[in-house]
Image (cartoon, rainbow, N blue to C red; front, side):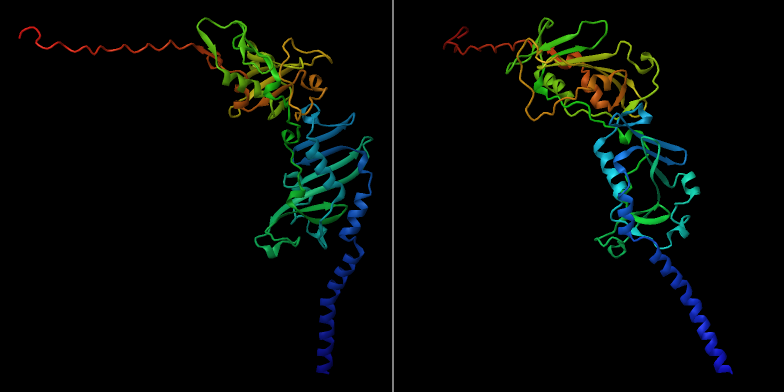
Length: 384
């Protein structure tokens, strides 16, 4: 009797151990594999994507496609960084390379994928919609984890690797941290590239150091040095400083776009220093530098752009734009109109150099050394 009872107990214990494992296996078999889920997710109408809305705690970010151009809603729809956005959307649409976490929904709190984590700002929710407001997909990015050894790399690399949990369609996935390129700072998503005007394309500079004073005007023709329209007496041009100023529009990028700014006086634009650049194509770029923003040495800057009509050029046939310089976009006047930008302090200061940095007094000629006489005193002089 005792042996039979013991046998029954052993069988029951084995069933208690095996049943949860069997149920877990059945659940995993019933759910989608990583390949199946990625294929079904990628089959959605991602070409119709028109809005990406992000939320984490009280922070929100909205990226919207209007008239075919992606923009950042929190920055008055200023154009977004197309390359970064395309890369992020492609990763979002394909969801390739993830690892399915079995029974992951039972651990949402642990993975910081639950509603409380979202409200506390530990998770990020990404909502995708088409132009009609229809949902294409919702993702939630949760906790970050970092493996400490190569053996812990779940993606079979050389590790260690940072990973992040992701919730999609009630399934939990593990992805490399590089996948989760969804930050909520609007400035991170702006297309910060402004101009790519090479220095040798600039043929005229008008430097307004003081609103009450006449500007310094410099010009040059093809292959010729800089000249000044009205150089103060006994002064000469500092060629290197003018060459540096002419190159200030090359590869120019800003830090942020200001929204809801106050009057010009509040940002230091009343009577502000400014410089106008005129290119060999006849385009005019005026840069007005305002006050510091209060964040480091960054400064407020405004741009005014007047593009020449086709065929119009400056009077002096200057050095043409370098062949490899990208053509300026024709929407620049509309993009810049009425906007205030934030530039790093050193970039902003480069546009408004001091007058004594561009011209300097002509140094007086060096006096020729007097020739000292070598006449020898005759022998038998006075007193002998």
